[in-house]
Each structure stands twice: as structure tokens, then as C-alpha cells.
Image (cartoon, rainbow, N blue to C red; front, side):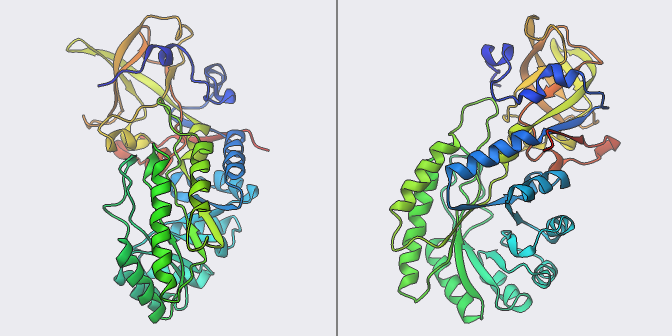
Length: 394
């Protein structure tokens, strides 16, 4: 396993929110585990993204972190939303969000969810198959539909193309079918994969969209929306393309887009907006030595917040810090960090350097933890998910 390098071990990452530096976290009197989210950092990320992509509408991906206070903050910022189920739509409705501002981008939906969301006023739906079009025609007659195009997502940490997306020629045929079924061919979308690590993925995807638009023009179909999807990466331990670099690539590709540029441009960011805004605080339950290895047992693990470490076979790396007053100065030794459950696979980090003085009662601070931690968390083995704590309210 790769180890976190010496500089990252001994220096707090520069992108760690100032309001959530270890000294501030040490003063927080909350039972662990808890997730502290700085709403000021969320506002900064949103402002940066929208400034980098002027004229592009933001639809926050609710699945990334669906806490109501966070959704309310995005609503106040003027963001629209993207959902994958009626339950997510209902969360937004509780906040007074008009379903007309919502995209339903799950391409295979329960028929009951289609009917319920359509009755509520949601009118735009993603699809990538004939079966979905027939469901939409029956349960959301006349709805606007946008086809999900399969694109190269091999440079992302979480590729999605095996499960979602239609090939270009298939996408054309599907939009023709949508028209024949009385649906409104509205747009095209793609997703370059979650935590995409190269800007060229967007350029290649937009070029593929252009080829589809050209074919559809001959069919008398002009699409109103180009949805650039998600994939905007957050900073964890390793460098990633900045949102400005990605935006420059997108703008350049859109400038070259032929035969036309759809009127509505959209993005569905999640991780970029919220990951770096939060720190997950776990308590050390015990410190053991097994077969010569140092083990730290935390009260938070894969099943109550850190599932992405399992999805990546323990290659997902977060910036780590501890509550030890001697953290930066202490001798650092490699640790295996594991969760509280009785499942041996509930082990999240291997070979991470932490103070040799770390012991039961200390805390471990896991940075860039605002995305997909609360979403995936369960009560497995009776251990509770992290409780959300919000700071930086306006």
C-alpha cells in the first residue's frame, strides 16, 4: 500500500478549512463520531464553480450529501437540484423547492416514482433505453426527456459507463422513439465518472455530443439542453485538475461545438462542492499491536461513513490528523486503521503514518469527508452514523 508522504503527514493540507483546523475541532464537545461541515466553505466552492462556468446552470447532486441544512444552503445560493429518487425530491419539497427546478437524472426509475414526481411538477427526465421511454410515456406523458450518452470515463476513480449510457447511434434512435411516443426530445447528458482526474474527458465527451447533434439535425430534432453531468473532483491527498482548468477545457470545447450550442447548459456537481467543506471526527476506541503492526480501532468505519475506502479496495486516501497535541512533532509510525464493527473487512486505511503516542481516547480527524459519508452511513452492528454538525451559517 502507498503511504502518505512525509510533507502531508507533518503539515496540515492548505485546503483544510481554517474553521476546522485541529485546534478548533479539539474544542468541540460532541460525542464521536460526528461530521463537521463548514457552510462558508460550501458557499466559496459554489461561488468558484459558478464564476468559472458563467452561463452554466448548477444542479446540485442531492445523493452526494442530502442533509437538509446543506440543501437549504444551496437553495439560498440559487442552485437547482438533481435527484435519483422520489425520496430525494421529497426532501427538497420540504424546503419549498419547486420541482420544476429539479432534474431526475437516474436513467432507470421505478414507475411509481415517475408518476409521483410528474404529478408534483417535475418535468425533465433522463433515460438511456427503450424500456425507460415506454415507462415515461405511460407515467409522464409529454414530459421532456434527455438521453444519457455513454462516454469514456476511464480516467475517473469511479467509472459509471458499464451501468449507464447509450452509444451515440443508439441515442439518436432513442430520441426518435421518444418523439414518436409523444415525449419531448429535450437534451443530452453524459457523466465522465466520479472524481475525474483529467480535463480531456470533458473535451472528448462534448465532441461526441456534437456528432449526435449533427445527426439529429437531419432528423428535425434540435435539443434545448446539454447537461455536462458531474465528475468535478475534490482535493483529498493527491492533486487534481482545478475547476478553472476544467472550465477552460469545457468552454474551449463548447466554442468548437457544431452544429449549435444548446440554449440551456447544466452541470450536476456534488463532490467538488461539499467534500472539502467537512471533517469526519472519529474517536480512538483502542490501540493494539498485531503481528508487529500498529492498529487503531475507531468508532467510525466503512459501514458508518467511509464506504468509499471499500469501493476502491482501500486505495481511497483522505488527509488525516489526530487530536494529539504533539501530532506534528511526534515520531510517526505506520498504522492500520479499522472500524468498530466485528467485520474484518471494515478496515479503512493501511500504512498511514500517525503519532506513535496515539492511544484510546484520542480523536482522528479525516479531512475532505463531506461527500458520500453520510449518504452511505448505516447502523451496522448497532454503531451509529456520524451526527452532522454545521458551522459557518450566514
